[in-house]
Every structure is written in structure tokens, then in C-alpha cells.
Image (cartoon, rainbow over all chains, first blue to last red; front, side):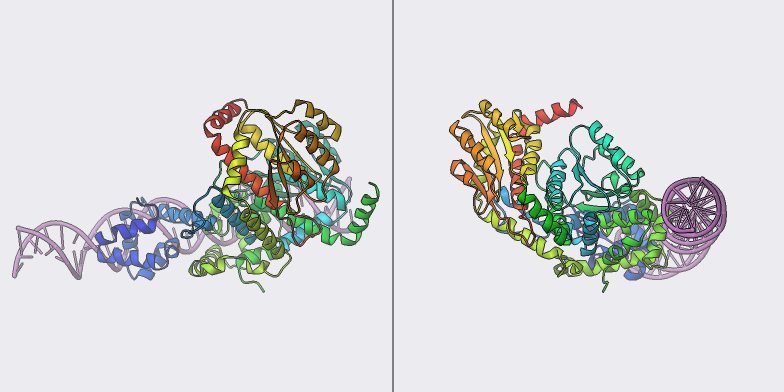
Length: 274
Length: 274
DNA sequence: CAAAATACGTAACATAAGATACAGCGCTCC
DNA sequence: GGAGCGCTGTATCTTATGTTACGTATTTTG
């Protein structure tokens, strides 16, 4: 069975004329980058003419050059998204646990790889600002994450509200929201219509939106001031929110650190209330 | 120092207008693939117009779009040649993020190291059994985990209840619990008195308790049939529940797999109800 | 060795891509 | 509340990219 284009090439390279074989070898040499360049560049690199390149991709079964490039990009996308697929990890094979754990570890690493300190610091700073109120809300499966974050933030600063219950209830809270306020939304596939509508309305009121979503980006991204894209793919029937959860914990920690002075006093006050 | 385009973007994303920020976020979300596509595709993915994409790359300092793409390709080439450099974003090394991430990764590995496949399989089997009802409850910070798990389990099987609200409310639910039932409790330091009392009473009624706790074990452990001890130590003012969260996700996956036949039908039925 | 078939490159073409000019809109700041 | 500025999208244009036609060179085969 042939799964990658590289395999397809090495399968047919024997039956190729000299010029096309040079094209094939050039492509394999630094796969798949040469294939992502223009026909002219590809042909120059291989030392053949443009039509030869086109005949080469035609022989591989592609209708035209763009189609060939799309296929390469898709392959690259799959490769970049699951670093787990790098060779095989011996020893971790076996039980049903390891794949899940391995995938989650990869998701965490990948998620944080695309997240710089600066981004997190900016978001934490915005959350630590005490100009306005902070609202948190989540979707069907992610609402617990919103609750988790709200539970912590509410301890170190005032005016933190988790929007729960029926849609109509939190929709009415819109009236309390303005441009000084922050709305933290958790939304992963399948994205919830009601949340998108809510986000749009909040955005129009000038509320700054911080969005936790998956790598495919919820439509809410277009209204969001900050977007955190977490990897969610795991070998399970469900998507994993673990990466978003860890980002949330990281942010909670960062905000706490920023509010240290004010926050510490508040925590002491809370303790004495028990 | 700025070495990668991703860093360059996150460095300047703060100083960008809304439209260009969307472009930046879309690119970062699945970096660098979106940037290798055409301007039209990029703009469609980001939900902005083509000129905005071009202004975006211009702001990054590139003369034109092809030059931007070449830079991305060069970066990708370097990355593909040395897979070692794929580990952590050098920009995030040494910052405030890494310690948190590293600690969490360690916690996950440690937690699962003390957790055998058999244990998880046993617990999953018990949860998949449909003899009785399943109740879930958590403490101050861990209740969201209980909710998260309940949200998933309730979809694939009937009689799953999350115990929420005031103590008196769920205490009254004890009357519905018997020896055929399962109670999943999340409790980490500082252990909650009310939860311990509740667990004890449930235990006396013959309810099987599955406990998620930290490595120091909540006092509920003495009543529990199964105990999952997760590592919680992170460089933060708060304990981390990430390890327990991942175990919960793993269990959800395992239970789903066991109920595949029955669960699939139920999920279809639920879908048709929308 | 000759003739046919195949491969390859040059050059012209059509198309789709990136770039630009301009007008409308929203936002900020007096 | 009004004036100014800056951002964004539509429409147009230009470039360069992929594609095709055709003639020459090369190899293969009888």
C-alpha cells in the first residue's frame, strides 16, 4: 500500500525517463520542500526544463501542479500535527494507556511550542488588570474548564464571574459588559452556535475576548483579542482538552504572581472569613 | 533575539490592528502551513481580505508575499533536517512557561507510572457496567473535573449524575444510592471535610467509591474501592490538577470503547434529538 | 543501419496569483 | 458630539506562473 508521495515516487522511479528521474531524485533529496516551490525553481534545481517537471507530476497521477502541491502540503500538515508519528516508539506499545498518554504529552508540547512567553504574559497582564470585570464561559464539554479557571481567579481578584446555566441567562448579562471588561471563552469543535453569537454581541459591545480553542480555530477567533490554540487529537472517541487545561493553569499561575501583593492580602482576608 | 518568524509575529502581534492580528493568529494556529498557501487561501482561512494578508506580511518586514513564503520554507527546511530542534520553542525556554510545562509533563509521567493498565481497565469496566447509577462530585477546585467527566459519561450511558450545589442538596441524594451504584469523588488538598463525611456515609450504604486525589491521599481513600493518586506539584501558588484531568480523559476514552456498541447507538439517538 | 517512437527543450499562451488605488467605515481624540 | 485619522474591503491592474504546442535530439527496434 502506498500512503505517502515519497513512496509513490520510489515505486515508480524505475519506470521513468532520465529527465524525470532527475526531478524525482531532486525532490527526494530534500523532501518535500522542492515540491513546494514553483515549477521554474524546481526545474532549475533539478537541472531540467519546466515541462519535464510537469510531465513528472503528471506521471505520478496528478492532474496539475497545484494539485500536486496541495497533496504535499496535506502530507506535511499531518506530519507536523502528530510528532508522535516519528518512527515507532518501542516499549510504549502495548496497553491502551500509553497511546493516550503519549498523545497528550505531544499535544502539550506542541501547544506550548506555538505559545510564546510574551503572549502568555500579555494575556496574564490583561487578566490581572483590574479595570473592569472578568467573565468566563465555555461550551458543552469545555465549560468545566471555564469553571476551573473562574474558581481560581475569583479568589485572587474581585469581579470574576462564571456564566452558567441557560443561554438566555448569560445573554442577559451582556448588558453589564463594556469595553473595560474581559470575556474568556472556551470553544472547541464542534463549535457552538450560541457561543459564537454571544461572542459576537460581546465583541460589538467592546468587550475584549480571550479565546481558548483548538487548532482549527473556532469562528469566535475573528472577534477575539487573544487566541490560544490547543492541540486536541488523541486516540479516543473524544477530543482532549488537556492542553487547554494546562494553559489555563499556567495562566492562573501567572496572574497570581502578578497580583502577588494585592492577591496575598485578599487570600488572607478570605481565609479569615471561614 | 528573534530567530524564527513565529517569534517575530508574537513579538509584534500586540502592535497590530485587528485584521492583521487575525491573520497572525490563524498562521500561528497551524504554523507554518497556512503561510505556504496562496494569499487567497490564507485570507479565507483568517476571514479577512487579501490586502490585509499582504499588509500583514509587509508589517513583518517582507517586501512581498513570495519573499515571506521563501522565509517560511527556509525555516521549515532547517526544521526538517534537524528533528532535534523540534522539541521546545527556544524562545520559551528559560522563561516562565517552561518550568510550569516541564513540571506538568513530569507529573503526568509519574502519575501514569504508578498506574497500571489493569487498574485503569478495572475502573473503566466498573464504570461501564450498567448495574446501577453513577454519581460524580468534586471539591472546591476539582468539581469542574467531576463535571467534565460527568458531561462525557452522561452521553454514552444513562443514569449519570453530577452532584452540584449546596452540601445539603447532594447529601439528600444519598437516599438514592445503594450497593449497585458508583460514586466518583475528586478531592485534593486541602481535603474538604464535607466531602469526607459524604464519602463515609455513601460507603456505609455500600456505594463503591472511585477516588481521584493527590499523592498524599485524601482521607477518603480509606473508604474507596479504587484510588487514583495524581501528582500535583508545580511551580505555582496553586496545585495542578492536570494529571487527574488526563487520567479522567483516559478513563472516559476507555469506558467509551467498552460501551462502543451500546454507546454508539445512544450517541446517534442523542444526535437525532437536536 | 535505418526508421520509428519516445523524450526533451524552446517559445508562446492563458490563467490565476499577487499587488495597488481608492472609497467607506469605524474608531479615537478633542 | 464632531473632526480627523487609520484600518479594511472592493475592484482593477499587472506580473509571473503553470500550461501547451511544436520542433529537435536521442534512443530503441526491426
